[in-house]
Length: 302
Image (cartoon, rainbow, N blue to C red):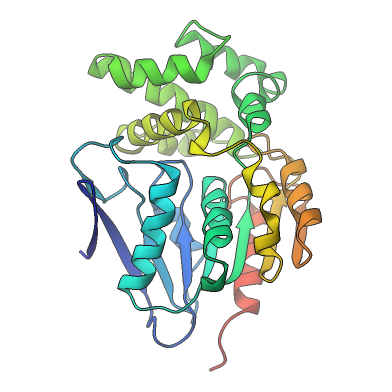
């Protein structure tokens, strides 16, 4: 398996689908933070002629690390993307990402606009305080009060749930950490789909994936994503020459549609498709169909 040593005790696992010399590749940025590349993510790119690069961000998936949270910040994740691009000697990429993957896509494009040919995003997350408050404190809890009660019962501190989870996930014993991770993952799963079935919830709560995601997500969010609030919208000028396609579920309760709407209105070349009967996840049927159509539209000529 190929790895890229990015220093600080981190080695990133990456995988390439197709021939990256044949056309400008798609670079997939997974969500979380800490979700890693999942089998379901790859289904979106199945059978495409355009090459695709997948990689697991620091501290998750198949990537290697000495300490998961050490030397793990948003700035370093952006630098990792640039190191991977340079290591593969690729001039430009098309970034594809949803949720936290959309955040990283936008941030990389702001810092390296000359390296980005196109952005394809969904579940837009600008990592603002208002979005974090909506999902973890006051917003989504109004739609899922029963599930939210379970979410806060795990920590017993509803006034600052993210901080309480972070403390439990990093300083509790192994059983406490795993229980907290499963609770964190369940709250995410319930909000990711219009009708989340038992299988989907079980997949999210798998101990192998829920613990790194919960630890990394809570760590990033107690640190405000390691960025100034509203950074992306205040730096949209750097994105004006990049084609941006956005797919966003009308009933996305993790990342409310207003963020995608504001981004689309701030960038001249952005095109927003609101899927009327979809929630957050890319696998939601309307989201998946819209994203596949976009990817097929930019396929290289045979």
